Amino acid sequence: MNFEVDYLALAPELVVVGTILLVLALDLVLPRPRKYWTATVAVAGTALALLPLAAMAIEGTTRSMFDGSFVVDQFALVLKGLFLIAGYVVFLMSHHYIESDRYYQGEYYLLLLASILGSLVMSSARDLIVLFVGIELTTGPLYMLAGWRKGDVKSNEASMKYFILGVLSTAILLYGMSLLFGLTGEVTFAGIAEATAGRAGEPLLTMAVLFMIVGFGFKVSAVPFHFWAPDTYEGAPTPVTAYLSVNSKAAGFVAMLLVLYLAVPDLSQVWAPALWVLAALSMTLGNLSAIRQNNIVRLLAYSSIAQAGFMMVPFAAAAVAGADLEEAFSATVIYMVIYAVMNLGAFAAVIAGARTTQSGEIPAWAGLGRADPRIGVLVLIFFFSLAGIPPLAGWFAKFVMFRSVIIAGGTATVVLAIIAALNAVVSYYYYARVVKTVWMDPATTDLQVQEPAGSLRLALGVAVVLTVLIGLYPAATTFVTEASKVLATGG
Amino acid sequence: MLTPVTLADYLPIAVMLVLAAGFVAVTLVASRLVRPDNPTPEKLAPYESGILPEHEPSQRFPVKFYLVAMLFVIFDVEIIFYFAYAVIWTDLGWYGVAAMLLFTFFVAETLAYVWKRGALDWNVHQRRRYIDREAA
Image (tube, rainbow over all chains, first blue to last red; front, side, top):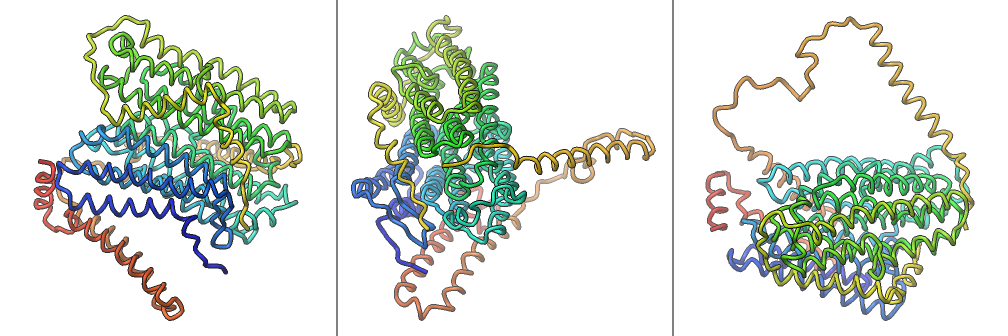
């Protein structure tokens, strides 16, 4: 056993732990009017944690610890960067939203930081135990955050549904993991991959893999495991919803792909068709349900279910066709990064817009474009980007997805590509409908324009710059594509 | 490089699904044939743990035990780490001492938090006053 600790490799996590302790301590000593310092410290801590990441990215070596259970490679660095930056933007979005809440400001930031810490650990996990602890630390605090508005029945419902289905999915996931451990006697991905090589077709192994896919399916709210998502997204405070739809979804995705790709690559016979079905169902049902939604957050909830389907397409297609998974992996990661940017932007625009319209119902947003053109333009940019209209970032995500499918080839793959293409067309309708309401419908009430808070403006600025930049100059994301191919098994 | 998919592995799963569905169908049909049919409104009502209360309790009662029990479990688990340390403390040396001091600090900070938030006050009315003061 090797217990050498590489402190630089652990530095991002250590910084976040330190920030958590500091936020907790500050929350205890600060008087009520000064509690906003907890937010400042949380934001500074997430930014500070990016420094060791940058240092390791420049250095470019792969670091492995604890017998290969914890690996920091280029892939992990990209994901940690994504989780930290997305968390940073969510903090900016939360600032004024939470300050209007009466108590427990410090706890809000503490719980979000704990969730970020979980996703950081999870990105480096190369064994089942570390992965499980990481993903539970990611979702655990969110059960409480979803129910943050204690007096609101919808928020209670959000928390309750998320908790019960979250715990159920954890149980199923854990059952699959325990079967896998029982059959192989290994917990590290490298060990499991070795032990399962050439054992495709054993019924119990098939069950183990399917159970794990079902567990992860709940976490990423893939159809048919998506029932909790719309209610939870609607009831939770909007910044928490943004976090749920970006960080927590990405974390579930990464965990699923890590396990399938690194631990059980030889069982692709089992998981490839399952992923294919999940991808096809998520895209179709997500998009068709989104058409009928009148609440803008529910619309974004179904849109995020559909986007999760798109994210699964490259990986499912490549695995079904038996093609090279490396290309598919980087296509999924690039889709995830772009989705994170534009979806955070869309939620920030919704928070800003809802302050003026005083409503989450789409018809009430009529005339917003004329009343407050800046928010109107931002809604247009983010929703068109989600639809995949060039020259905004979303088109490149879709382009990479379709390209990887074409590279894979094969009948089942082409069918999936056709389903994806049809769904992309369907999604134009409901994204464009929001933009149409905002810009073309006459205002039903006299809208009082509310200035967005400074931190929210910063969040919107970060998201809009990235969305336009990636759309106009996709080569800016090359480092993500390259880095996500450096995926070390540890071992 | 992976092999293309054939779906052969899904045969056992399909068999399981058919068996599970068949078991449910057979049970439902068999019990319908065998059992006497005598529905009453009480029987048809959805079961919700226990009997419906006749009237609301006259006063609200606090559930302090739940909070204390939860805190006890959390701290109990944390303290278990000390036992592990006590067994091998000579091998770990000063590194172990530093690590345990850090760990103790974490526990202490959590305790301070719980204390300040009023979770240890047995008298709930006092705690409410604290929160109101905090919010004012």
